[in-house]
Image (cartoon, rainbow, N blue to C red):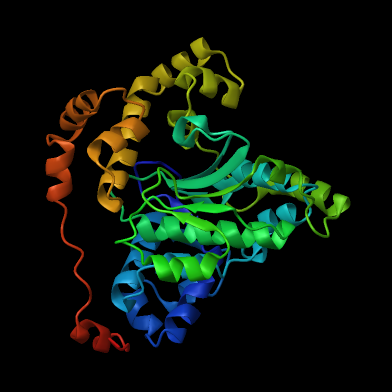
Length: 363
């Protein structure tokens, strides 16, 4: 079993990926050929408990979108998710007393089956939208430089499916951290009605009224819930993330909040700020370093996948002045944000030869 590190491959429990070969067949593509390009076989996707290298799984979904020409492939895949794909975690969620408790259980135990990404929840998110009384449930990939767009779309689709299965609720709004030019608006809207779709958002996330946390989980069994809570501690990948990785998993909602990073982290890990600083120093880093890493990672995702102007990206990262963000980005990358964005490779669609070689059709 691979040990998690945010700057290494990470690991992904197969789970929803068992649906990938059938989806490719439905789209008239040969899954064996598509999987072979990433050194996978069909057998790698017939067991939900099988570990997959996280980075390879992320790149595979990106391949599938490019090869099939389905630019929202990740969303389509995610919408096929069921809590049964989550194994014991899914049993826990199905028997939680409320949707809010299920979300907390999912976040608290996510590291047990995915090491490379992290879900998060933000309540009353005034920093982004100046709107209160709403619940934002989002997902962030933790490993930089991966083509994460399709994986994050898949996380949104899976989240929509899980919440609907558990509570019957649908999001009032879906936030996509990409522009409509990257993912066709008509196709996305048709899949997630009646939710409003907001492009060029700072999150890949679902939005619900804050009161949704009290919604009961349909058919929950308190006894099965207690049993799952006990059993989950030894489930699947039992290696706990180290303290630095725990902090990394918490940083996105912290970055997008009005209060200080340290105060929010202190509340999240139930630890005095001095203790947090000391433990980070013991691991050879600082909170400022981790915050800057997270800012750089999220800034690159927004510059790559959205049409947001640089000033809006700067604001999303908590900079009061765009010039300060530009100087920081140049220090991180050696380029200004505009220059970095212009240097991105063009998104070249698959040729007819590629499609035919993989058993598909360009039609």
